Image (tube, rainbow, N blue to C red; front, side, top):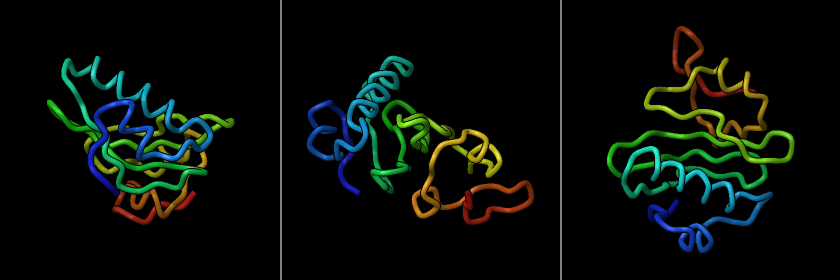
Length: 115
């Protein structure tokens, strides 16, 4: 959707303030920096500010993430390097827009995500 976001100021400039999304993104970026011991960047591949975000972190390594809203707050639904399991996405109980999530693994094939 745009350039990788490396600072809180870039998050403020590029992400909407939808239901605390900016604050959540800043917390997740700080955690990724700390967990990886280097400066990470958040990329946003797809976003529905009401329900979900798909993107990833890159820097000294990287991984994809799916965030969703649950109980009125943003939560990390999935993070990893493989295609997420459909059942795992559903088990988190977060609102996810299928157009944002894209595909998942149903145990035998990669299929379009359906809530």
